[in-house]
Length: 265
Length: 206
Image (cartoon, rainbow over all chains, first blue to last red; front, side, top):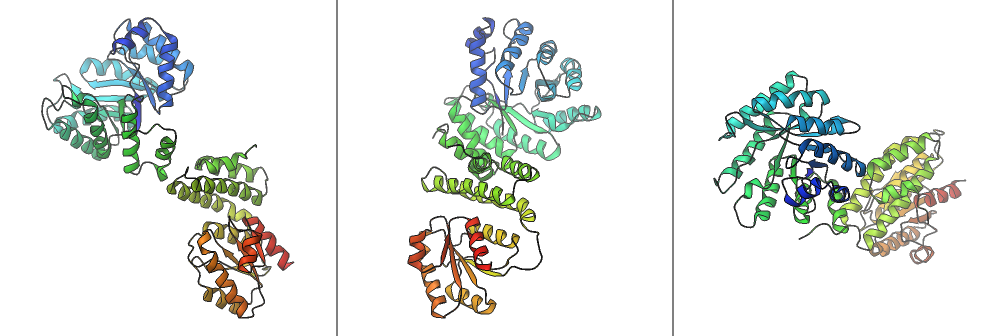
């Protein structure tokens, strides 16, 4: 399971303050803590504030303390470009978060991704909005895959996010998401990804719902998730599910984490 | 105490690192037997951690797999030399014990050093040892044991061999065996690791 650490996101008020105040030590501390907790990527979002200079700054300070690949998170192609430009070393390791089939976003973001041959999250949404059905999500995935394949893009670097909608809106939304993941994994040679918090919107005990959602998602073929690696309970769910799915040879990771005291009941 | 990098990688179950180190040491001209000893030192530590409850069963199994993979790389290097057999050795894990890792390493070392080895496998009853000795007329039999609870089975097998009046030396091997165990079960030699076993064979067949 690929874990994308979500901590450094300006949508969270206290993180926004750290970024706007250019608090290097605090930002680097959060980057390091997520890395130690087992994050595979670090998401960086500076949309709330002076986005471009903040993106350049945060990419620089985070790279000073860790070699983890970065997930450049913005709806603005200019912010993504600023982030990519600041990345040192192999830009192909970067995960751009995200492109979609909305025309303007696709037109602006696609050339950046193709230029760096970096990894990218593709949202199944177009100018008509988020699709209502599985079929429409598959159709949008097909379109995006087609566009990228024509440009000789390595599809194993494409992470499709089928955009799960809250259970509070419709009780079948989670089931539809799992089915969608299975269909995508079956039809296309791409990866799949999701955030964990949409599903539980406006429900009590959200974290419990998020954890079970993660497990069933992984069992359905979800390759990556954007989550808080400092939350030991969700990380325990990740490791236990990997163990159960046979992704952890001889349970080595699980047992190592058990001994380090990270796993929690 | 400075721990050898390969032993450490073995103990930490870093399988890619173990395989890389084994290859680089072979390329660097280090004797295969020395590499086996480093791997074994790592295995002994895994065993200790398992006994103390720090390691779990699946880690013991994984260590065995890593060892086997490493031995697959090492085996062709250990063999070679003359095609004439230096002599025949019978070997088996005693009744009640199904551990084959230590035995297999000794078998590999003996074969690699030019001995003809008759491997009776694991959980070997005393009758089978006796029969094999009669048939082959081998001058040396090796008995492997890991479980202390199988010590009496080992003693029974040796007693049966002696009762038949067979002219053979008995070598027992296992992590816990020592002089006291050797005397208790009536063996002639004991070995704590695979290279000890090889030394005994060389002594007998020289």
